[in-house]
Length: 278
Image (cartoon, rainbow, N blue to C red; front, side):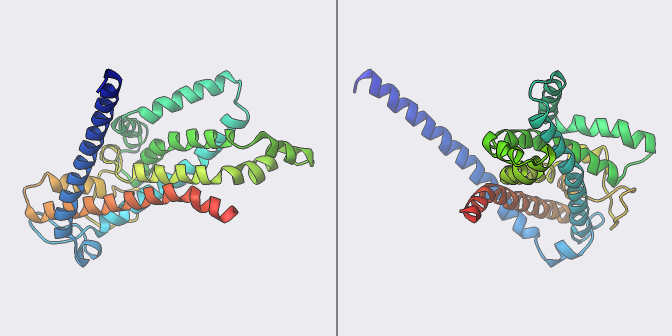
């Protein structure tokens, strides 16, 4: 075997081993998660409130709280992110302000989530004098925002210029060209970005520790501390009570399954749009 073939074989072998190691680690995590999580899953997990120390119960309030926080966070981030990304793509091509916004958006995208939590804590929790669901939703919205902004801009830039020119050529104003043509062409990518943002923020714990905190009660009042699954998992996993630890594993399995489903939807969505248009 000559040197060239040896190098090629060594490189491919190293790549294969690295891939196998990654798959092994992921499979080990999922095996442990499913094995332990199934033990704590039951009907009571979805119908009963979080229990007291050493008691039996479920995760109903945490599940509903997480759905509310994540849903409201996306409702805040999605329109702002899409509009901001539209401005960057359509009006900020050669604009210094746009360049600064892109730089800040990139920094926000890579910022640790705990810093976002501290920011919202100082901005909302301290002035209002207490933790609240609103603060938690805003923290999650801030985390989702940069992904939606960047993806919207990128998707709109990929829209063929001829499509926009055709709309302008028949006398359509720019806003109508954007809403009727550009958005329609970029819709799969934008919706995928929103779904990926949901997957990202649904498992965040650090920002919620500083904003919505947690609650043992069932509440839909966004002005009060709100139960949520990530913080509940953290608290129960660190406890010495077996019943709490089992619920923590069950919660981790639920949130992982949810994220997996959202990611599958985000991956398959462009193909569904393509098949529908064909």
